[in-house]
Length: 285
Ligand code: ATR
Image (cartoon, rainbow, N blue to C red; front, side, top):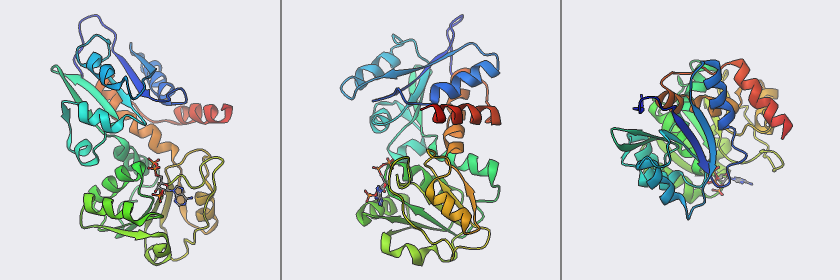
Protein backbone atom coordinates (compact mmCIF):
# COMPACT_ATOMS: atom_id res chain seq x y z
CA UNK A 1 0.00 0.00 0.00
CA UNK A 2 1.07 3.57 -0.65
CA UNK A 3 2.33 5.38 2.43
CA UNK A 4 0.02 8.06 3.76
CA UNK A 5 0.67 10.95 6.03
CA UNK A 6 -1.21 10.59 9.29
CA UNK A 7 -4.74 11.99 9.14
CA UNK A 8 -4.65 12.67 5.42
CA UNK A 9 -7.28 11.24 3.13
CA UNK A 10 -5.65 9.55 0.13
CA UNK A 11 -6.30 11.52 -3.03
CA UNK A 12 -5.93 10.00 -6.50
CA UNK A 13 -6.43 11.40 -9.99
CA UNK A 14 -6.93 10.50 -13.61
CA UNK A 15 -5.27 12.79 -16.08
CA UNK A 16 -5.43 13.05 -19.85
CA UNK A 17 -6.13 15.66 -22.52
CA UNK A 18 -9.08 15.77 -22.92
CA UNK A 19 -10.25 14.00 -19.76
CA UNK A 20 -13.85 14.96 -19.19
CA UNK A 21 -15.25 11.80 -20.81
CA UNK A 22 -13.19 9.47 -18.61
CA UNK A 23 -15.28 6.92 -16.76
CA UNK A 24 -12.55 6.20 -14.20
CA UNK A 25 -14.01 8.59 -11.57
CA UNK A 26 -17.30 6.65 -11.64
CA UNK A 27 -15.43 3.38 -11.09
CA UNK A 28 -13.18 4.52 -8.23
CA UNK A 29 -15.84 6.58 -6.44
CA UNK A 30 -18.16 3.57 -6.58
CA UNK A 31 -15.51 1.43 -4.90
CA UNK A 32 -14.70 4.08 -2.28
CA UNK A 33 -18.37 4.29 -1.33
CA UNK A 34 -19.00 0.55 -1.55
CA UNK A 35 -16.11 -0.17 0.80
CA UNK A 36 -16.72 2.75 3.18
CA UNK A 37 -13.25 4.14 2.53
CA UNK A 38 -12.11 7.72 2.95
CA UNK A 39 -10.46 8.94 -0.23
CA UNK A 40 -10.96 11.02 -3.33
CA UNK A 41 -10.54 10.37 -7.05
CA UNK A 42 -10.78 13.28 -9.47
CA UNK A 43 -10.29 13.95 -13.16
CA UNK A 44 -7.58 16.54 -13.80
CA UNK A 45 -7.15 17.94 -17.31
CA UNK A 46 -3.44 18.44 -18.07
CA UNK A 47 -2.16 19.47 -21.50
CA UNK A 48 1.00 18.01 -23.02
CA UNK A 49 2.85 21.25 -22.30
CA UNK A 50 1.92 21.11 -18.61
CA UNK A 51 2.44 17.40 -18.00
CA UNK A 52 6.07 17.53 -16.79
CA UNK A 53 5.21 20.17 -14.18
CA UNK A 54 2.16 18.14 -13.11
CA UNK A 55 4.45 15.15 -12.47
CA UNK A 56 6.98 17.36 -10.63
CA UNK A 57 4.16 18.52 -8.34
CA UNK A 58 3.08 14.92 -7.81
CA UNK A 59 6.61 13.87 -6.86
CA UNK A 60 7.29 16.75 -4.44
CA UNK A 61 3.90 16.30 -2.76
CA UNK A 62 2.67 19.81 -3.55
CA UNK A 63 -0.25 18.39 -5.55
CA UNK A 64 -1.38 16.37 -2.56
CA UNK A 65 -1.91 13.18 -4.55
CA UNK A 66 -0.72 9.68 -3.61
CA UNK A 67 -1.00 8.54 -7.23
CA UNK A 68 -3.37 8.20 -10.12
CA UNK A 69 -4.17 7.07 -13.62
CA UNK A 70 -2.78 8.44 -16.83
CA UNK A 71 -4.49 8.19 -20.17
CA UNK A 72 -4.09 9.44 -23.73
CA UNK A 73 -1.88 11.27 -24.67
CA UNK A 74 0.32 10.99 -21.56
CA UNK A 75 1.02 7.26 -21.16
CA UNK A 76 4.48 7.32 -22.77
CA UNK A 77 5.72 10.46 -21.06
CA UNK A 78 4.38 9.22 -17.70
CA UNK A 79 6.51 6.11 -18.13
CA UNK A 80 9.58 8.20 -18.97
CA UNK A 81 9.13 10.59 -16.04
CA UNK A 82 8.53 7.88 -13.44
CA UNK A 83 11.38 6.81 -11.14
CA UNK A 84 10.47 3.13 -10.91
CA UNK A 85 8.56 1.72 -13.85
CA UNK A 86 7.95 -2.02 -13.45
CA UNK A 87 8.81 -4.63 -16.10
CA UNK A 88 5.39 -4.41 -17.77
CA UNK A 89 5.59 -0.64 -18.21
CA UNK A 90 9.19 -0.88 -19.41
CA UNK A 91 8.38 -3.35 -22.13
CA UNK A 92 5.36 -1.34 -23.28
CA UNK A 93 7.14 2.00 -22.96
CA UNK A 94 3.92 3.32 -21.44
CA UNK A 95 2.31 3.59 -18.01
CA UNK A 96 -1.30 4.10 -16.96
CA UNK A 97 -0.99 3.78 -13.17
CA UNK A 98 1.31 5.80 -10.89
CA UNK A 99 1.89 5.77 -7.14
CA UNK A 100 4.31 7.34 -4.69
CA UNK A 101 6.22 5.00 -2.43
CA UNK A 102 9.29 5.74 -0.31
CA UNK A 103 9.58 9.10 -2.03
CA UNK A 104 9.72 7.65 -5.52
CA UNK A 105 7.20 7.61 -8.32
CA UNK A 106 6.35 4.04 -9.30
CA UNK A 107 4.62 3.18 -12.57
CA UNK A 108 2.94 0.18 -14.12
CA UNK A 109 0.55 -0.57 -16.92
CA UNK A 110 -2.62 -2.41 -15.92
CA UNK A 111 -4.29 -2.70 -19.34
CA UNK A 112 -2.95 -6.21 -19.92
CA UNK A 113 -3.95 -7.23 -16.40
CA UNK A 114 -7.45 -5.87 -17.08
CA UNK A 115 -7.72 -7.74 -20.35
CA UNK A 116 -6.68 -11.07 -18.82
CA UNK A 117 -8.58 -10.68 -15.52
CA UNK A 118 -11.79 -9.90 -17.36
CA UNK A 119 -11.51 -13.00 -19.51
CA UNK A 120 -10.60 -15.08 -16.45
CA UNK A 121 -13.82 -13.86 -14.86
CA UNK A 122 -16.15 -14.40 -17.81
CA UNK A 123 -14.49 -17.11 -19.90
CA UNK A 124 -12.08 -19.13 -17.75
CA UNK A 125 -9.69 -21.22 -19.83
CA UNK A 126 -9.53 -18.55 -22.57
CA UNK A 127 -5.75 -18.74 -22.47
CA UNK A 128 -5.53 -22.50 -23.05
CA UNK A 129 -5.23 -22.07 -26.79
CA UNK A 130 -2.39 -22.66 -29.22
CA UNK A 131 -3.12 -19.81 -31.59
CA UNK A 132 -4.48 -16.28 -31.09
CA UNK A 133 -5.26 -13.59 -33.66
CA UNK A 134 -4.99 -9.94 -32.64
CA UNK A 135 -6.39 -7.40 -35.07
CA UNK A 136 -4.64 -4.02 -34.86
CA UNK A 137 -1.18 -2.77 -33.99
CA UNK A 138 -1.89 0.58 -32.32
CA UNK A 139 -1.32 1.64 -28.73
CA UNK A 140 -4.12 -0.54 -27.40
CA UNK A 141 -2.89 -3.73 -29.01
CA UNK A 142 0.45 -3.71 -27.17
CA UNK A 143 -0.90 -4.53 -23.73
CA UNK A 144 -3.12 -7.24 -25.23
CA UNK A 145 -0.17 -8.83 -27.04
CA UNK A 146 1.86 -8.73 -23.82
CA UNK A 147 -0.94 -10.30 -21.77
CA UNK A 148 -1.69 -13.07 -24.28
CA UNK A 149 2.02 -13.88 -24.62
CA UNK A 150 2.57 -13.85 -20.86
CA UNK A 151 -0.27 -16.36 -20.43
CA UNK A 152 1.72 -18.75 -22.58
CA UNK A 153 -0.12 -18.73 -25.90
CA UNK A 154 2.41 -20.07 -28.34
CA UNK A 155 1.45 -18.54 -31.65
CA UNK A 156 0.17 -14.96 -31.73
CA UNK A 157 -0.71 -13.45 -35.09
CA UNK A 158 -0.93 -9.65 -35.22
CA UNK A 159 -2.84 -8.54 -38.29
CA UNK A 160 -2.86 -4.85 -39.20
CA UNK A 161 -3.82 -2.63 -42.13
CA UNK A 162 -0.33 -1.11 -41.99
CA UNK A 163 1.88 -4.17 -41.86
CA UNK A 164 5.00 -2.27 -40.75
CA UNK A 165 3.31 -1.41 -37.43
CA UNK A 166 2.58 -5.11 -36.83
CA UNK A 167 6.21 -5.91 -37.66
CA UNK A 168 7.42 -3.40 -35.09
CA UNK A 169 5.36 -5.15 -32.43
CA UNK A 170 6.63 -8.58 -33.47
CA UNK A 171 10.16 -7.25 -33.02
CA UNK A 172 9.30 -5.80 -29.63
CA UNK A 173 7.37 -8.70 -28.13
CA UNK A 174 9.38 -11.64 -29.36
CA UNK A 175 9.39 -14.76 -31.43
CA UNK A 176 5.89 -15.93 -30.64
CA UNK A 177 4.47 -12.87 -32.40
CA UNK A 178 3.93 -13.03 -36.18
CA UNK A 179 3.08 -9.92 -38.22
CA UNK A 180 0.69 -9.77 -41.17
CA UNK A 181 -1.27 -7.39 -43.36
CA UNK A 182 -5.07 -7.63 -43.65
CA UNK A 183 -5.06 -10.01 -46.65
CA UNK A 184 -3.57 -12.73 -44.39
CA UNK A 185 -6.47 -12.59 -41.93
CA UNK A 186 -8.45 -15.50 -43.39
CA UNK A 187 -5.39 -17.73 -43.38
CA UNK A 188 -4.32 -17.09 -39.78
CA UNK A 189 -7.87 -17.44 -38.43
CA UNK A 190 -7.84 -21.16 -39.26
CA UNK A 191 -7.69 -23.14 -36.03
CA UNK A 192 -7.35 -20.07 -33.80
CA UNK A 193 -8.89 -20.27 -30.33
CA UNK A 194 -8.92 -16.54 -29.56
CA UNK A 195 -9.62 -13.43 -31.64
CA UNK A 196 -9.17 -9.92 -30.23
CA UNK A 197 -10.14 -6.70 -31.99
CA UNK A 198 -7.94 -3.84 -30.79
CA UNK A 199 -8.76 -1.46 -33.65
CA UNK A 200 -11.35 1.27 -33.70
CA UNK A 201 -13.36 -0.68 -36.29
CA UNK A 202 -17.00 -0.75 -35.20
CA UNK A 203 -16.55 1.87 -32.50
CA UNK A 204 -19.60 4.09 -32.13
CA UNK A 205 -20.18 5.92 -35.39
CA UNK A 206 -17.24 4.33 -37.22
CA UNK A 207 -17.14 1.79 -40.01
CA UNK A 208 -16.72 -1.87 -39.22
CA UNK A 209 -15.49 -4.88 -41.19
CA UNK A 210 -17.03 -8.17 -42.18
CA UNK A 211 -15.04 -11.00 -40.64
CA UNK A 212 -15.45 -14.69 -41.29
CA UNK A 213 -14.84 -16.54 -38.02
CA UNK A 214 -15.96 -19.92 -39.31
CA UNK A 215 -12.49 -21.45 -39.58
CA UNK A 216 -11.72 -20.81 -35.90
CA UNK A 217 -11.70 -23.73 -33.49
CA UNK A 218 -15.03 -24.87 -32.11
CA UNK A 219 -15.51 -23.09 -28.78
CA UNK A 220 -13.17 -20.24 -29.72
CA UNK A 221 -13.60 -16.86 -28.01
CA UNK A 222 -13.99 -13.54 -29.83
CA UNK A 223 -13.44 -10.36 -27.85
CA UNK A 224 -13.28 -6.65 -28.58
CA UNK A 225 -11.65 -3.94 -26.53
CA UNK A 226 -14.15 -1.41 -27.91
CA UNK A 227 -17.07 -1.07 -25.46
CA UNK A 228 -19.23 1.60 -27.10
CA UNK A 229 -21.41 0.04 -28.36
CA UNK A 230 -21.27 -2.86 -25.91
CA UNK A 231 -22.08 -5.34 -28.63
CA UNK A 232 -19.81 -4.18 -31.44
CA UNK A 233 -20.48 -5.27 -35.04
CA UNK A 234 -17.53 -7.68 -34.71
CA UNK A 235 -18.98 -9.34 -31.59
CA UNK A 236 -22.41 -9.51 -33.23
CA UNK A 237 -21.01 -11.28 -36.27
CA UNK A 238 -19.04 -13.73 -34.10
CA UNK A 239 -22.07 -14.50 -31.99
CA UNK A 240 -24.23 -15.04 -35.07
CA UNK A 241 -21.60 -17.46 -36.34
CA UNK A 242 -21.88 -19.44 -33.10
CA UNK A 243 -18.80 -18.24 -31.19
CA UNK A 244 -18.52 -17.17 -27.58
CA UNK A 245 -17.91 -13.45 -27.12
CA UNK A 246 -16.67 -11.09 -24.39
CA UNK A 247 -17.28 -7.34 -24.57
CA UNK A 248 -14.70 -4.65 -23.84
CA UNK A 249 -16.29 -3.10 -20.78
CA UNK A 250 -14.90 -5.76 -18.45
CA UNK A 251 -11.32 -4.84 -19.41
CA UNK A 252 -11.95 -1.20 -18.46
CA UNK A 253 -13.33 -2.22 -15.08
CA UNK A 254 -10.68 -4.80 -14.23
CA UNK A 255 -7.73 -2.59 -15.26
CA UNK A 256 -8.76 -0.21 -12.46
CA UNK A 257 -8.30 -2.79 -9.66
CA UNK A 258 -4.50 -2.62 -9.10
CA UNK A 259 -4.44 1.18 -8.91
CA UNK A 260 -7.31 1.34 -6.43
CA UNK A 261 -5.54 -1.20 -4.22
CA UNK A 262 -2.28 0.79 -4.29
CA UNK A 263 -3.88 4.14 -3.43
CA UNK A 264 -6.64 3.13 -1.03
CA UNK A 265 -5.32 -0.10 0.48
CA UNK A 266 -8.20 -2.39 -0.40
CA UNK A 267 -8.57 -4.76 -3.34
CA UNK A 268 -11.97 -3.98 -4.92
CA UNK A 269 -14.26 -6.31 -6.84
CA UNK A 270 -15.86 -5.82 -10.24
CA UNK A 271 -19.55 -6.54 -9.76
CA UNK A 272 -22.81 -6.21 -11.69
CA UNK A 273 -23.67 -2.93 -9.95
CA UNK A 274 -20.47 -1.30 -11.21
CA UNK A 275 -21.02 -2.62 -14.71
CA UNK A 276 -24.55 -1.23 -14.65
CA UNK A 277 -23.32 2.20 -13.55
CA UNK A 278 -21.05 2.46 -16.57
CA UNK A 279 -23.71 1.14 -18.94
CA UNK A 280 -26.05 3.86 -17.66
CA UNK A 281 -23.36 6.46 -18.22
CA UNK A 282 -22.81 5.22 -21.78
CA UNK A 283 -26.54 5.35 -22.46
CA UNK A 284 -26.78 8.89 -21.06
CA UNK A 285 -23.91 10.17 -23.23
P1 ATR B 1 -5.11 2.93 -30.26
O1 ATR B 1 -4.08 3.58 -29.39
O2 ATR B 1 -6.51 3.13 -29.76
O3 ATR B 1 -4.81 1.50 -30.55
P2 ATR B 1 -4.10 3.82 -32.83
O4 ATR B 1 -2.70 3.75 -32.33
O5 ATR B 1 -4.52 4.98 -33.65
O6 ATR B 1 -5.13 3.78 -31.62
O7 ATR B 1 -4.43 2.46 -33.61
C1 ATR B 1 -5.64 2.22 -34.22
C2 ATR B 1 -5.63 0.83 -34.83
O8 ATR B 1 -6.85 0.66 -35.57
C3 ATR B 1 -4.50 0.59 -35.80
O9 ATR B 1 -4.17 -0.79 -35.77
C4 ATR B 1 -5.15 0.97 -37.12
O10 ATR B 1 -4.53 0.42 -38.26
P3 ATR B 1 -3.27 1.21 -38.93
O11 ATR B 1 -2.09 0.93 -38.05
O12 ATR B 1 -3.14 0.62 -40.29
O13 ATR B 1 -3.65 2.66 -38.95
C5 ATR B 1 -6.51 0.36 -36.93
N1 ATR B 1 -7.56 0.93 -37.81
C6 ATR B 1 -8.18 2.12 -37.67
N2 ATR B 1 -9.08 2.30 -38.67
C7 ATR B 1 -9.01 1.19 -39.45
C8 ATR B 1 -9.68 0.75 -40.64
N3 ATR B 1 -10.63 1.51 -41.22
N4 ATR B 1 -9.36 -0.45 -41.17
C9 ATR B 1 -8.41 -1.24 -40.58
N5 ATR B 1 -7.74 -0.87 -39.46
C10 ATR B 1 -8.03 0.31 -38.90
